[in-house]
Image (tube, rainbow, N blue to C red; front, side, top):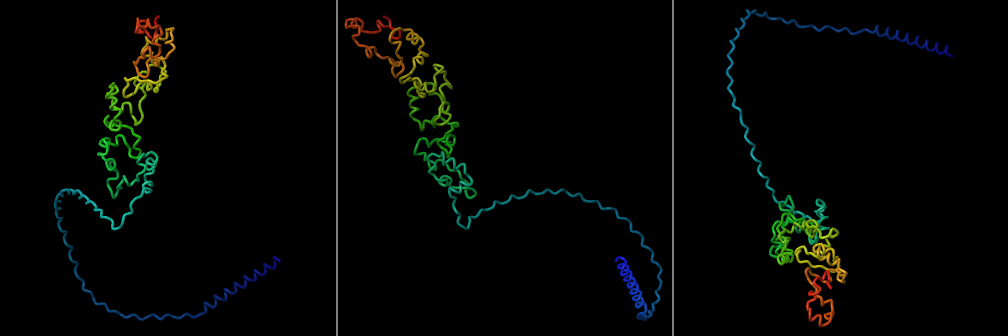
Length: 326
């Protein structure tokens, strides 16, 4: 099989060789057209007269360089200020802002006034903020817009923002204010301090009231009568605006009184009589230094009529009620 393929291939090559020789023979025997040369016209050239060479021009003398004039530096003028742009009113209707528009940019302010705004909660944003940039230049209102100074003494106080923040006006942290600002709303306390003067009356209100409706503890400035006393115990006897007028309710322990009246407390504690079992406030009722009379508790004829006629005053015999003598 392979021998047969070899013979076929060899025969094919021989055929190609003969075909190539034949093709070359045909090409060589084909006559080619002879190209006739084109006749050229004879052009007679006129004789050119020969001229003597012109002498080369002498080089011109070099000119001296002219001095350069000094140029003074120029000063740039300051640019003229740009004239202000005149804002012309719009030729279309401006849609007014609504409260829900304020929430988009001022969410915390709206939250504060909704939760802590007091009477300001009933107002809309645009009722106080009449303008907003860029169309308006005064977005912050004045308190006098609603709080007419002629309506109340307190509204005549200047510098409202020292105490009040409009979005929560009743939560006040006091700045540098005078006592007159406080007394314009709390006149009763001012009258009390005038009627019953004490060292407290010489203090500024803000020394005890740093924040509105809050006050300092008594122990912040004073040493308690007893170690176990609390701020509420102090207020049971002393009113801060008239601390010297001591009034007390039932239930005051004897040791609270004995802190200031040590000799009396010791005498009562060492007594064997019934008075030692009583509380101080049973005889000194309601008001400091008040004294209950003996016949308010004891029968006037306890020792017989003749004895009482001879000694009309109980203390003639019982000279110390806290340690009764026989």
